[in-house]
Length: 266
Image 1 (spheres, rainbow, N blue to C red):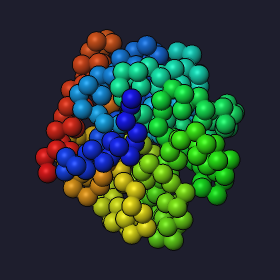
Image 2 (image 1 turned 60 degrees about the vertical axis):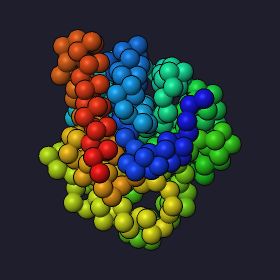
Image 3 (image 1 turned 60 degrees about the horizontal axis):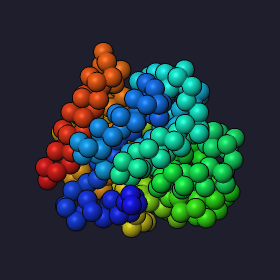
């Protein structure tokens, strides 16, 4: 039985460390290889996988993830294929959540998507462009099928807005380290620790920081104040830079081990 998100965070906390969350789009560079890449990440120490649902208009994503998403779409990745990827990595023992813009979920059917994700063993959904006020249908479907509703807070969020967002959240809260699109950066946004501290005033849910984390040192820095460390573009870049599937699998495994060591340095 694959562990649910809450169980994974509790286990990491018991080990006095942050959970490591890694993102990769389903179907990138092909559906079969994406499963092998994700399993390599888990084997090397990633605790939770964010399975990206490829979308043709990824407004929040930087050029690295946009390129990966375009390759996944060119390979014919559909929402059904994303669910299949989740099922395959669940069968291999991984805990996963889906990262998706709202439009593909709405078009697929809200209840249908929640039911399919639950049947595949998925634990939650991060929908960065869905506000809690517009998510009543999703909240009902997710609750009915035991899917966590993972919402985002940002440095620009007021305390009142954070307090409102977290009342609708479950699983964990995604704290964006900086304003702007996704992408590896030379340093994690300076507002991240303050955002985590502000968010803790209003929720007992774990708080994970993403956007910009790409190295073991950065993972250690974030792990000092957050419950989870989210890494996306750095994994995608390793795949884009590799000259073969086997090289890509090796590269993401190496990065996962480095980051896993980083969240354990404290």
